[in-house]
Amino acid sequence: GAVVSQHPSWVICKSGTSVKIECRSLDFQATTMFWYRQFPKQSLMLMATSNEGSKATYEQGVEKDKFLINHASLTLSTLTVTSAHPEDSSFYICSAWTGAGNTIYFGEGSWLTVV
Amino acid sequence: GQNIDQPTEMTATEGAIVQINCTYQTSGFNGLFWYQQHAGEAPTFLSYNVLDGLEEKGRFSSFLSRSKGYSYLLLKELQMKDSASYLCAVRDRSGTYKYIFGTGTRLKVLA
Image: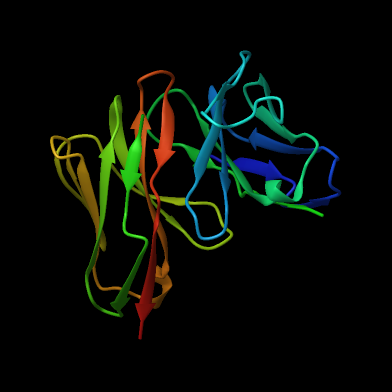
């Protein structure tokens, strides 16, 4: 089946620094990738939708200058949390869509802790 | 905008049947999905409905009524391992395609 790899699985960073999370589709080309964040005991909140080669579309309330998304190739999208603060600590998870069919494929998720 | 609601928590007994409801309001409906998620893990796909009616897949069934903006996931012969969160998600095509998740239902299965 389709595999999406997300890295790192766990990251701890200091307040004020930036951290990058990668999402790779390993055996298919992902026209579109979606980035979600999830707080404990809550559902997935869509942050942004990124299409290869174009600017990401951010959901209302998500700061595009703080959460930088790049989708430079059909197999890689990155999320950079800039100037991280403790309130950015969360589970971030990506999913990828081939552009055809119905199924989206999730990465394993990344736990970010900002101290 | 989109609004997708589910009960927050449910409890059921091993071997029983449980129905998890989902109501949605979205401007560009293009399919409804159910996912299972264990804590700290990625969601796993359970079912997909785009037309009205019931889709059955082993112990899991999912129903959709587009006119009512309503879906449910039915889990039969509950097992302890079914304790998890169940997420209803709607694919919206009003702009770019996107998948919006509901509030999620935490199901606890008791022995």
